[in-house]
Image (cartoon, rainbow over all chains, first blue to last red; front, side):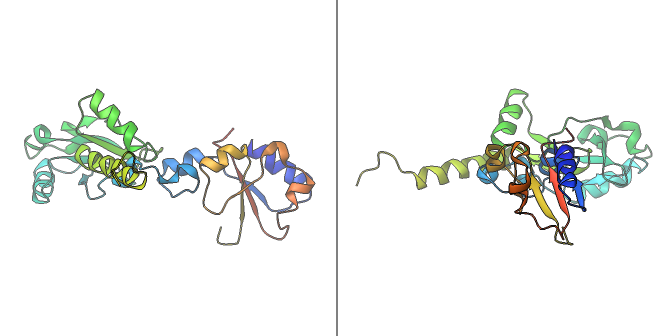
Length: 173
Length: 54
């Protein structure tokens, strides 16, 4: 649709016309801001913790373990140099032999959500699948952060509370 | 964008009202003709977008 629009503009004499192949899907999936009626709905990307530890596939588990636990985390994402997620380490993997590389013990290809998924949808999915965390990545698989269920529940409750207080129903005068 | 590009969403206006890129204007493809395009400056770049690559 957008290439056709660009072509039509060129036919009309516009000389400097481009089209954005990724469009709205790409934009919102990258966690970039957007406007419109749905812009106020809480999204999982807004609540993902950006400080979740990462390591490279070739890093030694002993070094990763020290860094991760030193920062009071119990999980770490194994990422490429451009932050594409290739695996995840949790307690079991962090306790592996220190000389092993992260890539040798990691859990491959964790499932992820895009940042524009609503908090409500994410909580439903986490509840159905008994999950406490959800990695958030761009559509190219680059890590944005880790959403914790407790953070999402708090955000959801705040949203409900805000809507309730701005639209009081049945309150006594 | 830095060169003052004009961002144009060409999806139906209801979709634009739900979600659009900051600063984008709405000119649905079905309504894209000389008259609606008159809102655009010819001396600045124009970038069109829809949902994705389609």
